[in-house]
Image (cartoon, rainbow, N blue to C red; front, side, top):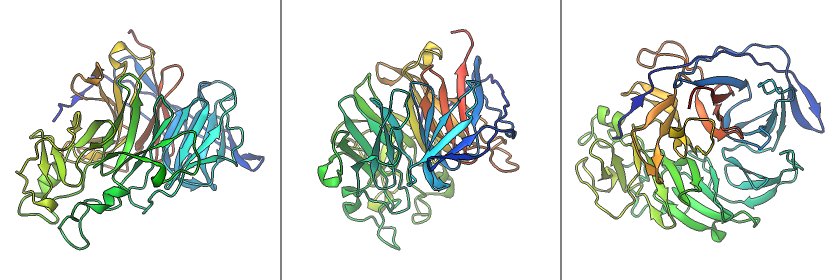
Length: 425
């Protein structure tokens, strides 16, 4: 397991924001009035500070920031019938004071590439043209780029990445947690689900109405990927996989409840076409630093699998739920963060008593070059070792602003945080 390093100094910031309501051309517009946000105290390394720039937006997922500094954010559940918000700061005081809602579908993925906005539903992908101000030219008439993808309610996020050649990557999670046969601890032979879920599919950005038959099955053996990012330095796709569920429910002879809480690792992979990360046949044990044969396919907690499947390039504690991944390319933050990976962890590790945080992995020459560390903490707002009261915020998505600041969405209160740096570099 890669050692966790907790940053030892923090900065704190509280902030106010407000909402009111008007309408324009059928789209929902919200303008700033005079309410007060709950205090938000993020723990950050020295020189960093955080501000809440928007609040009460709904079940937010991923987000994208325009060249002008405006924000598009996707919603997992429709709010006022809308699945995307365009957010802007009209008076330039650092607080979002207007939002325009559009799109009648929920979902997770959203990104901007070449003055076009891409957004996913739970079964497809849509494209919108942006004008020179970064605004969608026609919110009611997107192009349907991808349609007909499997959507079975569970792990149905369709996260997105685009490379430098116009290829669109779409993740499709498995609705069957461990590919078990119904009411059994036995794995489905060969896991036939892998033909349509549990992997990454590659489409073209300049074609419409694509589905499985038009796609390249780019990578398989990935139970559920919500966080992914194209790395322009390495010319490759990086993903974060959610690890499988418990072992001890069907295999108490091999695994204790404690082992189920500590295994398997959440894993980062660098993908190239044809990659196979091995789910559901193997899992990664971060303590043994080995791929292990899954008990559904004959494993006993001791049998390892050498070769055959892709090795992770980084491993993290179990059940943290990595929900977004971003390679930092800005210049605002100190040099150590340049080209490194920020990861949102949406859940908590009970044994670790940590979670609901943004982590950082330093990179050098396209590979992890040191221990991962907690970058932004205390979204929960409570001590997870002795929890009292409800969780305050739950980080979900990441985006980089044109000035190099880092934006983090929250799906619990519908807030957006902006993290900036003003210390010595």
